Length: 469
Ligand code: NAI
Image (cartoon, rainbow, N blue to C red; front, side, top):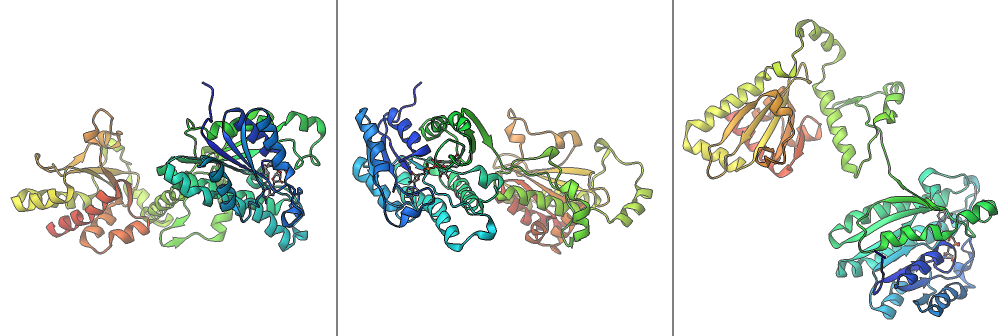
């Protein structure tokens, strides 16, 4: 199926030459109303403060309209005039559907020669310009429940490049903006992606040999910009590195990390140096999707640190712990066993008590996975079931095979609404209220998977259990 942009308005900044022109021609060829913004400045942006040339944008408009396409020119400065540029689009076509933030300048200098003005101008065009345009189109895209924004990054930003500190900083700023807008745009079908191109243009003319430039024609980048801008594209928050007919996706990866200290006791600088290999071990890397992903791992590490015995304790325990229990043979952690036994007696002792428990858990299933203090790998799982309005509530110690099994799609009713991971001492302290759930969570002593709302109710359930003991 040919991707059509009929009745779509596409705005390309810096569309008067290089890559921007290639994008504009591609959209025009596919039936779009194209707004070509360009102030016709020099590569270093020097003309941006005067001596503007309208020919860059006008020539591309002429090229498109002479072939039957639809295009208008705009000569404003992206750095500060995003609203004016969007106004041009609205006046000409009544709406804005796609924004390609392509305008850019270069002021390459090694860092020790970097002047404040160079830094500011590069950030103004790239980063402020991208902001200015995104900000101006955003309410229109929200109102129409549709939008496609393609921002332009650079390998210099992703990987760093000699002599390009200002440019690299601006481009990484654009990436952060893109990833955030991709999240904020979800509810209005606004998709926002970042292209990291390589192409022959005046920007690369002095750094790449002509034979290579010939192979890197901007027309190789335009197709992915059009694909991402199309209404059928579902991609958002993605980074594509492309050029010369080669298309790849880039993700920010991180190692699994290693817990050193955590909780109350911090690691020393010496611990960090000694563990640099483990910290930087990418053999099982992952690709976080938000800052919360790291927080989860931090909490897990802190919880492990809290419930792990010190080396001296571990040595002492080694003598008394043998034989190590396999999961099938795990005896339940004693404090939790006593707590849940008391709770069971409590809820079965009177209709009022049953009702109190049901009111808290409703028809949910909640799993408590409780680890032995001395051997955190040995865990037992209790399933608490509220019973809803028709069934009897229950508290069951699950066999280890059932506890470790993933809930199957065919029996969703068996799936817990949330799973709470704690140590034996922690659950006892929560029940006796010598430790608050908030503090336990902050200190990584309590981890929650699934619904936080249901997990919060467990505070009261544990208080019931504590008072029943
Ligand atoms: P180019 O210099 O040929 O095109 C940039 C266009 O932006 C020019 O027509 C210029 O007049 C316009 N422009 C500059 N400042 C402006 C402002 N304040 N307001 C409105 N228009 C303005 O450069 P090229 O290579 O086509 O680059 C396009 C984009 O791609 C830039 O963002 C650049 O950083 C990025 N890029 C290019 C790479 C390449 O290999 N050519 C590599 C990585 C990124």
